Length: 136
Image 1 (cartoon, rainbow, N blue to C red):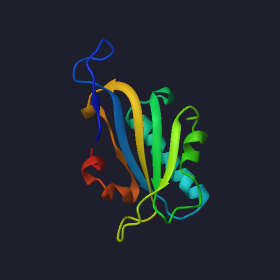
Image 2 (image 1 turned 135 degrees about the vertical axis):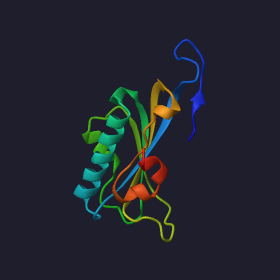
Image 3 (image 1 turned 180 degrees about the vertical axis):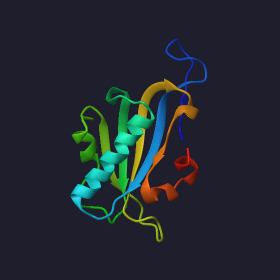
Image 4 (image 1 turned 30 degrees about the horizontal axis):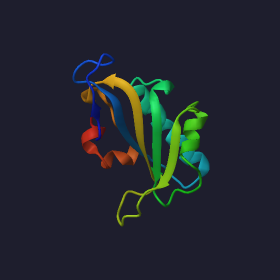
Protein backbone atom coordinates (compact mmCIF):
# COMPACT_ATOMS: atom_id res chain seq x y z
CA UNK A 1 0.00 0.00 0.00
CA UNK A 2 1.55 3.29 -1.11
CA UNK A 3 1.09 6.22 1.24
CA UNK A 4 2.63 9.66 1.16
CA UNK A 5 3.12 11.05 4.62
CA UNK A 6 3.16 14.82 4.97
CA UNK A 7 3.47 17.08 7.92
CA UNK A 8 2.14 20.56 7.29
CA UNK A 9 -0.61 22.83 8.54
CA UNK A 10 -3.26 20.82 6.69
CA UNK A 11 -2.68 17.57 8.58
CA UNK A 12 -1.54 16.37 11.93
CA UNK A 13 1.67 14.42 12.31
CA UNK A 14 1.24 10.76 11.39
CA UNK A 15 -1.75 11.25 9.08
CA UNK A 16 -1.81 10.75 5.34
CA UNK A 17 -3.54 12.93 2.78
CA UNK A 18 -3.35 10.47 -0.14
CA UNK A 19 -4.53 6.98 0.71
CA UNK A 20 -5.07 3.88 -1.43
CA UNK A 21 -8.07 1.72 -0.58
CA UNK A 22 -8.54 -1.75 -2.05
CA UNK A 23 -11.58 -3.89 -2.62
CA UNK A 24 -12.89 -6.82 -4.64
CA UNK A 25 -16.09 -8.70 -5.35
CA UNK A 26 -17.13 -11.56 -7.61
CA UNK A 27 -19.92 -11.65 -10.16
CA UNK A 28 -22.17 -14.65 -10.72
CA UNK A 29 -22.15 -14.32 -14.51
CA UNK A 30 -20.64 -12.41 -17.39
CA UNK A 31 -23.72 -10.23 -17.85
CA UNK A 32 -23.74 -6.43 -17.95
CA UNK A 33 -26.40 -6.09 -15.25
CA UNK A 34 -24.55 -8.48 -12.93
CA UNK A 35 -21.17 -6.76 -13.39
CA UNK A 36 -22.68 -3.31 -12.80
CA UNK A 37 -24.75 -4.47 -9.83
CA UNK A 38 -21.82 -6.13 -8.08
CA UNK A 39 -19.55 -3.17 -8.77
CA UNK A 40 -22.20 -0.87 -7.27
CA UNK A 41 -22.39 -3.04 -4.15
CA UNK A 42 -18.61 -2.91 -3.76
CA UNK A 43 -18.36 0.86 -4.30
CA UNK A 44 -21.18 1.62 -1.87
CA UNK A 45 -19.54 -0.53 0.79
CA UNK A 46 -16.11 1.05 0.22
CA UNK A 47 -17.59 4.55 0.55
CA UNK A 48 -19.67 3.63 3.60
CA UNK A 49 -16.93 1.68 5.43
CA UNK A 50 -14.51 4.57 5.01
CA UNK A 51 -16.99 7.41 5.55
CA UNK A 52 -16.10 8.90 2.17
CA UNK A 53 -17.83 11.63 0.21
CA UNK A 54 -17.58 11.71 -3.59
CA UNK A 55 -15.40 14.85 -3.53
CA UNK A 56 -12.74 12.99 -1.51
CA UNK A 57 -12.25 10.36 -4.23
CA UNK A 58 -9.41 11.27 -6.60
CA UNK A 59 -9.49 8.26 -8.90
CA UNK A 60 -10.55 4.64 -9.14
CA UNK A 61 -8.87 1.89 -11.11
CA UNK A 62 -11.06 -1.12 -11.84
CA UNK A 63 -9.80 -4.46 -13.07
CA UNK A 64 -11.88 -7.41 -14.14
CA UNK A 65 -10.78 -10.93 -14.85
CA UNK A 66 -10.79 -11.81 -18.58
CA UNK A 67 -14.04 -13.78 -18.16
CA UNK A 68 -15.93 -10.53 -17.35
CA UNK A 69 -16.22 -8.45 -20.50
CA UNK A 70 -19.95 -7.67 -20.80
CA UNK A 71 -19.65 -4.20 -19.19
CA UNK A 72 -17.17 -1.63 -17.95
CA UNK A 73 -17.18 -1.64 -14.12
CA UNK A 74 -16.46 2.12 -14.16
CA UNK A 75 -19.95 2.69 -15.55
CA UNK A 76 -21.30 1.74 -12.12
CA UNK A 77 -19.28 4.55 -10.53
CA UNK A 78 -20.71 7.08 -12.98
CA UNK A 79 -24.23 5.83 -12.21
CA UNK A 80 -23.52 6.37 -8.48
CA UNK A 81 -22.73 10.01 -9.19
CA UNK A 82 -18.93 9.80 -9.22
CA UNK A 83 -18.86 11.99 -12.32
CA UNK A 84 -15.87 14.16 -11.34
CA UNK A 85 -13.63 11.19 -10.52
CA UNK A 86 -10.96 9.85 -12.89
CA UNK A 87 -11.90 6.25 -13.69
CA UNK A 88 -10.02 3.53 -15.53
CA UNK A 89 -10.98 -0.02 -16.48
CA UNK A 90 -8.39 -2.71 -17.21
CA UNK A 91 -8.25 -6.46 -17.67
CA UNK A 92 -6.64 -8.45 -14.87
CA UNK A 93 -3.72 -10.73 -15.77
CA UNK A 94 -5.03 -14.17 -16.75
CA UNK A 95 -3.21 -16.25 -14.15
CA UNK A 96 -4.05 -19.97 -14.22
CA UNK A 97 -6.06 -20.95 -11.15
CA UNK A 98 -6.88 -17.36 -10.15
CA UNK A 99 -10.31 -16.54 -8.76
CA UNK A 100 -12.72 -16.21 -11.70
CA UNK A 101 -15.29 -13.48 -12.39
CA UNK A 102 -13.59 -11.01 -10.08
CA UNK A 103 -13.82 -7.22 -10.07
CA UNK A 104 -11.04 -5.42 -8.21
CA UNK A 105 -10.86 -1.77 -7.19
CA UNK A 106 -8.01 0.55 -6.26
CA UNK A 107 -9.47 3.82 -4.96
CA UNK A 108 -7.24 6.82 -4.28
CA UNK A 109 -8.70 9.28 -1.80
CA UNK A 110 -7.71 12.70 -0.52
CA UNK A 111 -8.51 12.88 3.15
CA UNK A 112 -6.28 13.15 6.21
CA UNK A 113 -6.56 9.98 8.27
CA UNK A 114 -4.45 7.31 9.84
CA UNK A 115 -3.65 4.21 7.74
CA UNK A 116 -5.19 2.03 10.47
CA UNK A 117 -8.50 3.83 9.88
CA UNK A 118 -8.67 2.60 6.27
CA UNK A 119 -11.12 -0.23 5.63
CA UNK A 120 -10.38 -2.40 2.60
CA UNK A 121 -13.49 -4.28 1.45
CA UNK A 122 -13.54 -7.82 0.09
CA UNK A 123 -16.98 -9.32 -0.50
CA UNK A 124 -18.35 -12.72 -1.47
CA UNK A 125 -15.83 -15.17 -2.89
CA UNK A 126 -13.30 -12.34 -3.15
CA UNK A 127 -12.77 -12.60 0.62
CA UNK A 128 -10.40 -15.44 -0.25
CA UNK A 129 -8.06 -12.95 -1.96
CA UNK A 130 -7.24 -11.07 1.25
CA UNK A 131 -8.59 -12.93 4.27
CA UNK A 132 -6.52 -10.66 6.51
CA UNK A 133 -8.39 -7.56 5.26
CA UNK A 134 -11.78 -9.26 4.83
CA UNK A 135 -11.83 -10.24 8.51
CA UNK A 136 -11.57 -6.65 9.74
